[in-house]
Amino acid sequence: MTTYTAAKVFTGAGPKEFCSAFTIEDGMFTWVGEAEGVDAATVDGEVVTLGEATVLPGLLDVHTHPSFMATLADSMALLQPLVVTRAGLVKQLRCHPGLGAGPDVWVMGFGYNEDNYPDGAPTRHTLDEVSTTQPVFARRADGHTAVCNTFALQLAGISAQTPDPPYGQIVRDQAGDPTGLLVEPDAVDLVYQLRPAPDRDEVVRRLVGLNEHFLSLGLVSINDLYGNFIVDPLATYRDAERSGYLPSTGVFLAYPAGELPRLTDQDRMGRMRIAGVKVFMDGAFSNRTAWVDEPYPGTESHGIVTASDEELRTAVAWARGNQVQCAVHVMGDRGINHLMDLFEDEAPWMGELPSIRFDHSTLFTAEMMQRANRARMNFGIVTHTVFFFAEYDSYVKNLGPRQFDIAYPIRTLYDNVDHLALSSDAPATAWSTCDDPFLSVKAAVTRTAYTGDQINAKEAVTVGEALHLYTGKAAQVSVFRDVGVITAGYEGSFIVVDRDPFTIDPSELDEVKVMQTWIRGERVY
Image (cartoon, rainbow, N blue to C red; front, side):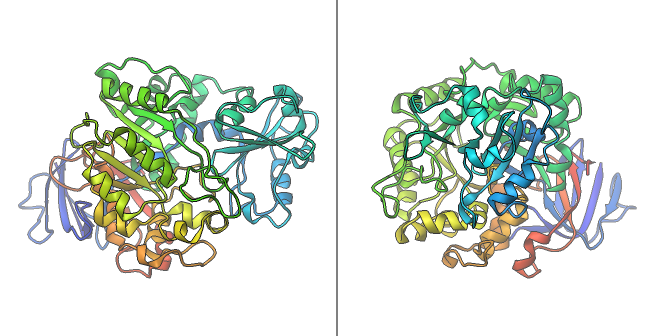
């Protein structure tokens, strides 16, 4: 039994809930109170004084992609602010260690965002400047689009005669020839599936290698929203856990990317578990494929639908039958309303936990929130502030005035929706530190983009509210319910930060650093 004292402890139970002392026994919080009166002579067990430090609960990221990160270990980083021009993209890819190693070695990159490239968007001709004798492949920051060189197109057998896949697009020039741009996973995978995948032992090593990344950000519990990036994801994660991988991880299986198995109780238990199924219902705003009510400016396009009603019903039925969540990637307002059309009158199956999650939800009116609250189904909302911060150029270009006004309405959501969390979608966000929770907190509090532009200041929240969306509120959306709050009966996981986020200038929130991370009463960072 160990009792800890600190100058300030944010409990995560609410936006204004603080204490200054807590006790951990057998990895769980057993007492929470005030440091006054805590004395080594009168308290059972050890007393650890954290001095003037500010302590927070261990943080949650309920929508991120560690298995995707593991596959990107051999990819060059192309994210802002590292790469901001097409020429810079070529220069970075030319630094790939596999360049010149032969036609079977892929030169890969991840994270480009061409929206503010002064020299234009990359095409196959751009990547041909890197190599014409081996495949070159770069995935866009949103994860929904990729570009490859001519060699890779030929390797995949993609030509002017190749039809578009059902839920994707092979972009073509005026002559009908492929430009190298592939939109949405069905098209991207025509090329991506050909690359040599790392074996299981290597994936396990890469997952364990992510400990430093997650723990340095204070993340102790995460949801992997596309476990299919690796083969046999649950078994692989459990191998990684045995090898030292630490954050508790709920794995979502993508549908219809793979066959959905029948789950056992063991699959749904433990620090590594199957948490649900994920379905892509629409695309993204950065490439104008999110499914929206109002057409995109200057077009008649309302985006695209990437899942049929039958596929959605199949995924929901599997989730119900296996007692896990169904998370739906749905950004546009038309998509969100359609999802409610399909399922609002059905009975939930996950108790207090949301049975169906709207993930990446962007365009949300107060009326839509009220509709979700009235529904028989228990819906949850997972949204972002880092998207608007990092991809501001895309949203300015792709949203009309009304849409811009209701994009990522965190204040209104916080006031009206019970099951709500902030998350990162890392690494599928156009910023090199996109899953730093304090970057998201800063964006939520200041409503300021990386450009310095204000983004609907009326939708700002307080520091306590933003952190609540990474702690106690996030736990109400995740299958890991006993994390994110410093209170008796919860997992004894907490972090120590280098400054008090509640008193510093909000413009400095992204400078907050995690000094210590503790999981179940053990210091792990």
